[in-house]
Length: 283
Ligand SMILES: NC(=O)c1ccc[n+]([C@@H]2O[C@H](COP(=O)([O-])OP(=O)(O)OC[C@H]3O[C@@H](n4cnc5c(N)ncnc54)[C@H](OP(=O)(O)O)[C@@H]3O)[C@@H](O)[C@H]2O)c1
Image 1: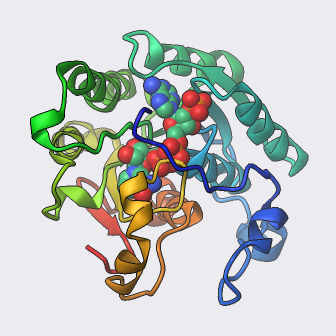
Image 2 (image 1 turned 30 degrees about the vertical axis):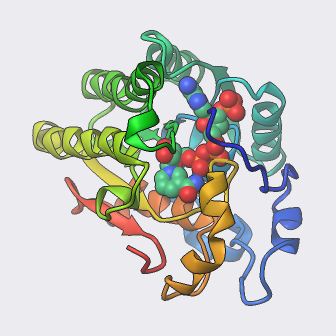
């Protein structure tokens, strides 16, 4: 993650601590107890969330677990963070297991599916969130960075999608995380945006293949989200991005997690093959 140079997200793992740092207009996330009789729409489901130790993936894992799913929390280098995600889910009454896998390795996705099947009995939901970025002029981008971007973002996603096509239970859900950069024209992100465009196209095609099994395949395109993954360049120009965003702020990880939860649930049973932008109107 060489270009992920600015760390601003709180390392605190309690929802209440996250809430304390929110702007005053933001409401804290609903807890299952707040939601009433439909508190656990994903009860009985098993979710694999890639890159779930931090950032968007962490918020997705927490949200799906709060909705009742048992969750495989994938981590690569942040063992402590992953353990804390799992502990937080368990403390809230949910079920989760942390599994180390490098999505840039050919065996990475297989380890996650196997862990889900051995621990929870199968897989119903796959969230392909793992993705790395590189911000550099094309003139300066080296082949090793190009290869790593494609290994994690494209091959890793492909291998996870192939496993899902083979092993997801009927009626399952696949949600991929792309980026609004595929719809916009910004300098210095061409290869990164290219990897995500590949993800979007793989997802569209797969939605046709898996429709007969009632498995939906969709992709979420976030705008800027306040995670460790925000590049230093973007961070330096944050005011301009906020000014250009109709909803007047940049995204939080849970803004994306809530969209993923919708797509993962029964409410989205008639939505497939779509790319859904969640960017506060920026894109
Ligand atoms: N943040 C944004 O503004 C933004 C906007 C649009 C799209 N996205 C996309 O959203 C996704 C998540 O981004 P983020 O901002 O949440 O990232 P982040 O905060 O930097 O989090 C990175 C996460 O990715 C994991 N990871 C990195 N390389 C991995 C690998 N090879 N195998 C498995 N896990 C790996 C990390 O695990 P460890 O810490 O355990 O190594 C960590 O959990 C990415 O696909 C990104 O392209 C982000």
